Amino acid sequence: MSDRPPRKFDVVEKIKVAVGELKIGMYICELDRPWLETPFLFQGFTVNSEADIDEVSKYCQYVYVDTLRTKIHKPEFGRSSGQSYFKQIQPKRVVSFQQELDQAKATKQATTNLVKSFVEDVKFGRALDVQLAKSAVSECVSSLMRNQEALMYLMQIKSKDDYTSQHSFNVCIYSIVLGRFAGMNTKELEAIGTCGLLHDMGKISVPLEILTKEGKLENEEFETMKLHTVYGRDILMSGRNIFSGTVDVAYGHHENLDGSGYPRGLQESQLNLNTKIVAVVDKYDAITSNRCYQKGRTHLDAIQILNKIATARQIDRNLALGFISSLGVYPPGSIVELTSGEVAIVVESNPGLQLRPQILIVRDREKKPIAPRLLDLRDIEKDKSGQAYGIKAMRHLGDFGIDPADFQNWFNHAA
Image (cartoon, rainbow, N blue to C red; front, side):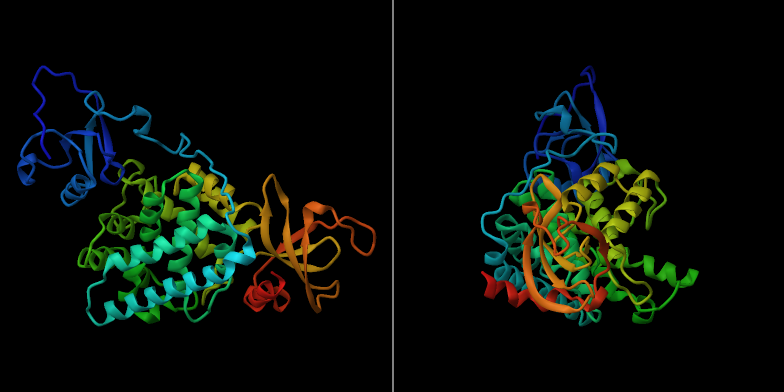
């Protein structure tokens, strides 16, 4: 880092920026602490590299940027919940759902296994190698780029006995999906995916009896649970090949925009974009997953809850709306009841026809198992009563004994 300090008669037009939202080209004119408490040589410098950002993150939570000396476009600054983050990039499919499914399964297995190995590392006092997480996330990004629906279908296959690794994987994938919808490049997607994968590492240090307790936690137990954000920060700070973004997200993903979150009660302006993204998708996956103390809600229920807490300024409203848009009305792997009374699993969406996806019918009108039948609702096919097929309602995962896992091999034979 090197640059001349601003002269006393220079005009300064500064704005407050969270360290996680710093970009190359920004001119830092003021820190959130005295300059003498940092190793920076000049009281004012231009950010010239990602290494500069990492160095600043070691000492500061936020800084002040001089917009007149900054050499990037001003619209990048100060995006609030009242402004849109999104270019709304519609994902293209390079390969079919069937073609990608096997590779997606291998990617999911490798990634969840890595999380399990990280759990063991922490338990035995070994440092995490964040580079391994980045490599696994890179494979997730590649799979989503080829066909997004395959991995999203597999996310609905959840193990009751392995919530930690499943939740970590899901938050990773949802974060990438939302980032992709916002137009992030590959490097940015890998960064946000790594943040999502490692956001809950601190829960490893929370007593098991609290993590698995059925029913509401007592005040003292909840205070202990909240410490997982601090534990996560410490675990990642002591890891190998440290990536500062994961530390920020692990520490801050339970902060609320209105300052009511924990552990520090930060305000919106103090939270970076990655933290805000993971906060949204973390809540969505928690709402829709079966836990020891609650049954998972449907996608439509989760949408209503996200809207409610976004209105209350607990999460970023634009990010919540963008996430809802990126998932669509009927996400892959959802269980839906048809107007005919039959029951199906959603396979793929149809661009421009959100209410008429491709589905796999697996139960008859009496809700009894049948030989699976693939149906594209955009074709307006009629059922036995002569009425056009449509979706009547979304059902919970597991309703009518349906598990998307039971039909993975069917797609291989149907390809």
